[in-house]
Length: 328
Image (cartoon, rainbow, N blue to C red; front, side, top):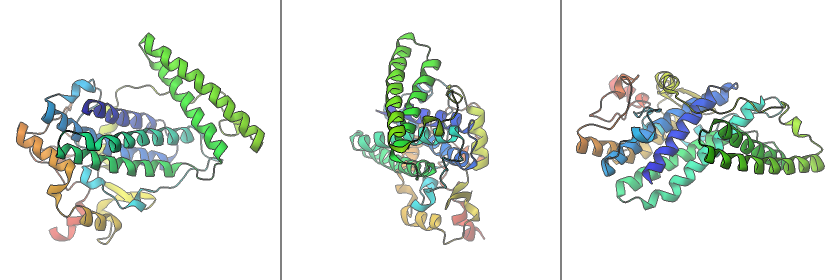
């Protein structure tokens, strides 16, 4: 269960990084970079649970393609619901690749959320069950954020065509990137199935709405295909520049710029009055107690100095504004 979880989080990290580096819409890009750090942090939390409970090093599971260290601390990811809803695309003016990206990342986060919510109660101990439940709620926030990027005015048939196009694109990308001949045949079979579905959906779009497939995706070829690889440098850059951001209505801002009575700080005080009870940080503290220090895999020191201590879990990065008045 935990090994599969590590794979889910690595996929979320690398897919988000790949999509972000090919995104043209600034709102989409901001959303991708923002949630990237949170999935990155989730990998670190689950990897410590895996090491503590099973003595398995997650760096072997991620093939050392992805570093394992704190991102935006999970406690700082707890936001008031309206701060997760962002500006939507306009499909009439948006680039087709941005439409494609918003659909892909919404589907990926939805599947991850469902996985955690369905399995949370089946982990073998209480602190693990609580960790799965907490991360599931953050994934639900991601689903809300990403889904809000999609144009809410598109028709049911337009949405169907987009779904089928996304599936065909993903299977084709996997088919081109796959190195195992046997598995490539699976991607190829599914690609042709989705092409058949896409043809059906486009025929109904034309019949009932008088719209052509090219009205939605005018280019004759797929956009740049997804190719998985190493994104460590990009991820470190995003950590260094955005770790202290939080949601601020439809935008993002440094948490220190928020007023004391902002939704974010009020939500934090209500939900996290007792930091010791936050499951994601309880797991790290338990790991430190058992192992002597947290479990990490990193190529160089953490880009954020406050997150570099392996013997003390940081719960203030991303929430500094809450303590500004106390320090003053």
